[in-house]
Length: 355
Image (cartoon, rainbow, N blue to C red):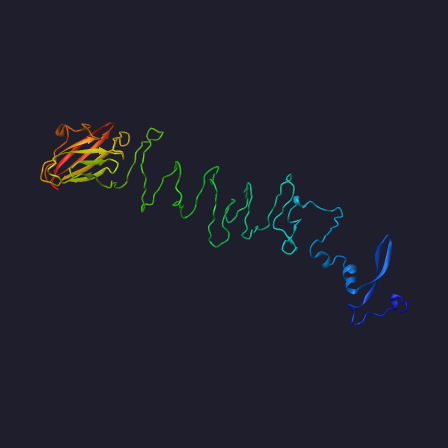
């Protein structure tokens, strides 16, 4: 083909350049020497017209260099709105915008101003130290920071401490819910209620081992326990042996009862105990009262003797029944009341009930 000027060349036809068409290009041999080579249309497209092609940057072990032209900006100290970050997605190598930022400086803290919620997509946040909350904007009508379940499906929100879980506030801790279910976890240690009353649902009961009224610091603050309504003690039946020997444990109840059935054993003891070891402990029931009835289910007249842990004479009676108490006539019932003060027990009786 004779050499022609470019202006003398005809325009490309409708077929265009095919894969078998070649272009004359040069290739560097080093040392300033070049050789003339032929190039296909595809090679010209990838390496001449488009210096960085898809085949150059895809796949493994490809180096990509950016000419910063001395205009790089340390975006770790800049606002995210003005300097959005890019990340390389591990699954396919695509560049994506990041939802979080990490930088290698500890001298300048990162002040991230979120324009919208940070969605963790069900993933965990682990290894966090202190998380500080500070909010001057109203969120959901509340001018405070909060931790809440935002998934909208009503699942539980769990705070779990592998040792102690400490909740503290400079003022009060406000608990607002339909109720606090502590059925699986008891309160440990002393619990104080101040500034208000402790109300128990009237449909339920307060079950305790002991109630103490403590006198207040002011002169008119008495240690009184007021009951608006009736109080009662569940009666307990005490043990009566076949020989009429009777043991009454003061711990069982303030109201007790029992029946003797042996008419041939007219004299017998009624022993008072209030410990499992059957010993009289003056410190356990000082100030306690005990009322019980003793029913004689025989026709004989019986003579019970009331004793404290086997010691005769520790029960004090008035002149009417001194020294051991009244007799119990046949087919009758007597009602006794005893009051313990210090180491003494004082007794009184009403006799002659025909039951």
